[in-house]
Amino acid sequence: MKEKILFAFYIIGVIFLTSIHNVYFFIGSIVILFILSGRQFSKIVKKTLKAILIFNSFITISYIGYAIYKDISWIDYILLINLRVFSITFLTFLFISKVNLFKALSFSKTLSYILVLSYTQILTFKKYLEDFKFALESRLLNKPKLSDSYNFVSSMFFYFFNKSINNSKEISQGMKSRGFFND
Amino acid sequence: MIELKNVYFKYNNNELLKDITFKVKEKEKVVLLGINGSGKSTLLKIINGLLFPQKGKYFYKGVEINKKQLKNKEFNRKFRKEVVFLFQNPDSMIFNPTVYDEIAFGLRQLGDKKEDIDEKVKYWADKLGVYKYLNEPPFNLSGGEKQKVCLAALLILEPEVLLLDEPTANLDPKTTGWLIDFLYELNLTTIITTHNLSLSLELGDRGLVLSEDHQIIYDGNLEEFIKDIEMLKKAGLVHIHRHRHGKLEHRHYHTHDF
Image: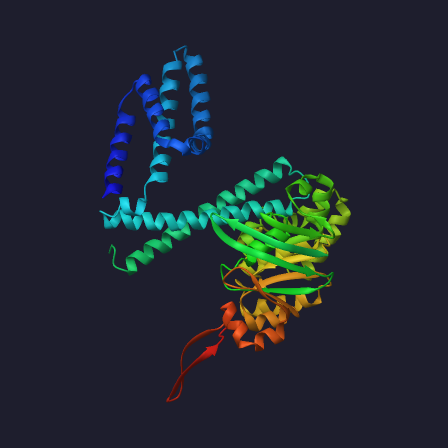
């Protein structure tokens, strides 16, 4: 029951964080989240920053460029969007670290199935990703050239892309075969 | 050539290797047996300097292999050239636009001359039967062909130690037969993991067996190990179920791996 209540709080938290547009509200929320994270504070902060860094940097730089070109103010918007993304991501990682997701979603069969399927995919992909990194490290005799890094990243991207498509086809066939849907 | 002393490795609070001690001589062909999850792949990754023991030590040609040692660029280059690793899933090793580039990758890194690289790429592609694919992207090849391309890409470096992780796991019987013959003719140190007992005899003479408890429980002649039912049971490499021979039905330990 505890997990389900915490899940409800998490959903309410996300709704608040997406619907309020006040910088001070976000600063206050982040301080509360930091306190709630306790000993895991630095671990979750690092994880959050790692998760949002590329996407947020891209959005921020693009918007600043656009705002300067159009001669409009950008500070408030950039601050708001970055704080919003940070707080939601931090809240999600905090929630995952404290709550057993399988118990939290056990009220719905469909959500539980989706979670199990996603989780198995994540574990498989995590293993593949590790193998890709190890295989490259094992074959590198010197620092890789830029073209080698590009080839590596693109081949990995296509591998995971194709694997996702094939896996989702197989999973949907498996679910159909077990009578989850019929269309 | 290779020496492990009381190696211990833990990942995510799971003990994967406990007190692993053994030596491998030059040109020796060792088969690493164990059930899934016994730590075979982890052990190969340690020997390839991709993971490092949390306790114990690993020496290659008398030099302790650790993070610090592999940060030495010159040593790292020598080590990576001499000790090569064929991953179970060849897709994880393939990233060059053509089979030619894939095989040439290692020599290009070493800065070899173009003509020498060309000659060697063609030699190894021909030896491994992938010559006709040289100008094609490796991604579209079958699993067995990808594995051959990866082997060519490793062997072109003229390594001294070849580590193979379940090399026959994704191969059809015909390619498995070809691989056994190919590996038999290679004059270098090989450490091959498998959980296929009958195949193990074709891959080497010496067996190192990991138990379900992640410890080495046997180090010696493979044929003798396979005859020792108690040891096989301890390693979890045999199973028991009901057998039917016509009207007769009975249970006993056996394998079904070939």
